[in-house]
Structure formats: structure tokens, C-alpha cells
Image 1 (cartoon, rainbow, N blue to C red):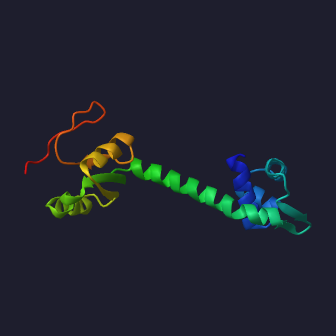
Image 2: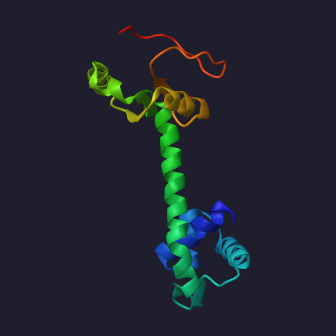
Image 3: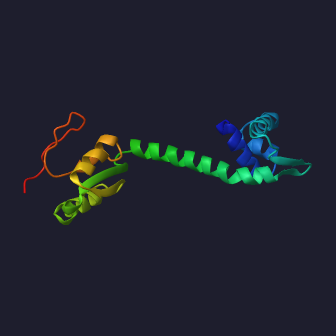
Amino acid sequence: MELIEIEAFVTIVNSGAFTRAADRLGFSQPAISRRIDLLESELGAAMFERLRTGARLTDAGEAFLPFALRVLADLHDGASAVRELSSGDRGTLTLVIVGTLASTSLMERLKQFRATHPGIRLRLETANSDGVSHLVRSGEVQLGLRYYDVSSTALYTTPVADE
């Protein structure tokens, strides 16, 4: 299944006709019809009833529509996320800390970080020291703060404070 097939499908739904969809997408009407034929062949069902006045969704088309809309929305969101990353301080930082650190001055520093970097979404998790190491090592989080140094070639560690 190709993206253009899904775009054609949704554009036909929104415009009500193959010809109007072709105009909106900048393709010929036969090219749009061919894309829908390929989609219907792959899905094994007709997506539209072709009428003299346009096109109407079949039951199969109705069933497919929410998924097609979600695919296009997710692709749009993904492209926006990539564009935002290239424009500076954007993205998500995932931090896991030992729970008892949540009651220290660290929380104040995290608030300051959020204030100075509003485009970065800060996701915070808690775990015990071994859990912190596991989450960082597995790639589930980007940064971890734990007690005690850990000797591991799989982690880069540096002391940041003394008690």
C-alpha cells in the first residue's frame, strides 16, 4: 500500500468525486482511478460506489476511512516533529531519577530548565538505582540520575553532586 493511494482515497472522500480529487492532488483522473484500483485490489474490497454524480463510500470504505485518516495525521505529525527539531530547542527529553531525588533541589532546577527551554518536553520517571541504569542502558530513557557510581562500559557516568 502506497501513501499516494491513501491520500487519493481520503481526498476522494473529502471532495466527493474522483475528478475533484485529481485536481486537488495535481494528477489526472485516470491516475487517481488507478491508485484506487490498486488500493482496492490490495484490500480485496471496493472502497467506493462510482456514481454519475461522484463517489460514495462502501461499507469497506467506511471501515477503512478512520485508519486512513490516522495514517495521514500521523505522517503529518511526524513531519512536523522533524521540522521542529531542526528549528532549535524542540523535542522530548526523558529523564529517570531515583525517587528520593525528587524531593531535592533537583525539582527546582528542572523547573528552571523548562522555563528556559519551553520547546523541549520533559518526561520524568522514577526508579531505584539499578532500575535507572537498566532504563538508560535499554534506551527507554535518555538520561538517568542515580546514587553511587556504576562501573559499566555500556553507560557513560559522571558524578554530579555529593551528599
